[in-house]
Amino acid sequence: MLKIGEFSKLAQVSIKTLRYYAELGLLKPDWVDRYTGYRYYTLQQLPRLNRILTLKELGFPLVQIERLLHENLSVDELRRLMRLRQAELEEHVRVEQMRLDQVAARLRLIEQEGRQPHYEVVTRPIPAMLVAGIRDTVEGDGNVRHLFEELRHSVAEWGITPGPLTPFIAVYYDWEYCSSVEVVVPLDKRRRARGRVEIHELPGIDTAACLVHEGRSDQFTAAYQALTQWTQVHGYRRASHNREVYLQGFADDGADESFVTEFQLPVEPVSLSKIYAMETQIMEPTIVNKEAFAVVGLPFTGFISSAPYADGENNNEIGKVWDVFNARYEEVPNITGPTCGLCFAMPNDKEPWYIAGVEVSQVTNLPAGMISKHVPAQRYAVFPCTLKTISDTYRYITEEWQQKSGYEHAESPDFEYYDEPFDPVSPQDMKLKVYWPIK
Image (cartoon, rainbow, N blue to C red; front, side, top):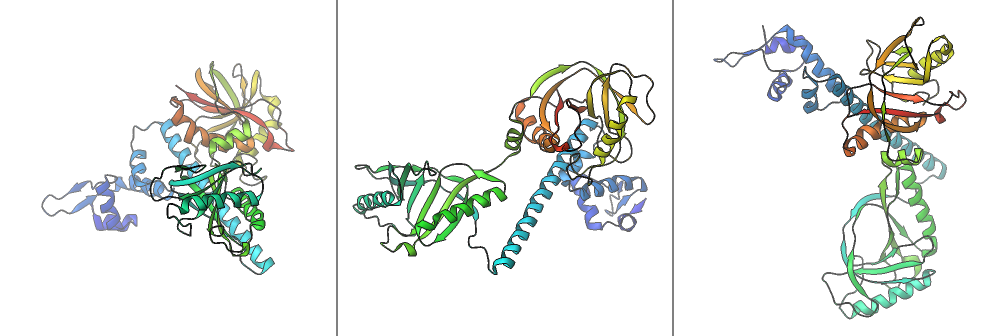
């Protein structure tokens, strides 16, 4: 046995870290002297420590590492956890790449114009508030001014004077056509409605993209264009009715040039399900029962960082296997179905876990370098997609659909069926179906 200090030096891990792992139950000492409290480890514990360090390097939290260390954890569960981590890392890379693109765009603007961008957009929640408001159908800025005058006269009788902390707000329910607008002012307590003034709660906004504009109202278009551009770049979409908050103006009898207006645009992220819906025009998969079948094709061993053909010649390991298989397609006897990408194990660089192949009626005269796999009868959820969206589709399945569907993931291979011929000119547009095993 090795004392904790000796084991620490051998493993190149600090004593503090070893003690912490022991507290969490990840790596307990092989034996602890009940009298002295000395901790002792064995050489046989090094592989477990190395596995902990490897999983930590992959970014798994220690709580999840404890689960991954269980010997009775199924291969299917291991694959699910690894794919989930892969999806998290891909999302992190996507966000960081987006941030890098934004920095580059900002730098180009500074270099071209010699100044900072004119508008800055921030996001924040907007709480619900009690308001007094007048809603009407209007056209043009002049009629909105008339509504503000009417509202100001009404709330003045309650001793309310609009200002920066109790500003006039315009809510555009049909803002593209300026047809339905409500002008409101926040209230500190409920009042009795009078005339056209209604008292109600203006709903809060979970996430609002906010921008401050100084100056005339006839320049509002540029501010809205900046907001629209920001939402597109940052992966958001308009979620509800936009608002204009007049921090200075209308209530101050000032000139248009002195206006200070905050634009609040409710936004929501374009989720995986919405990406999937936009790309495939379908939200719910088809549930099918498929008889047992066999696949013959070329095996793949290794890791991938993107979907096939996502980056042309880069990060395209599986795509290259498919190129070779497509050239040797005629060598496979007894073909009965479409080409099939069969995933039968967890991604690794030690042994095959994926086949680029085709469905066959029976396995005979296996071509050189090819392997076969038998797939048992199974129930599947079938998701249409394209090569371009295959990564988003798997993320949608594992992160959203699986949890809300009520189905459990079955311990069986998942695969992609390619129903149409491969087009090397535009491979990303190729249509396919993802078969996800369920029970």
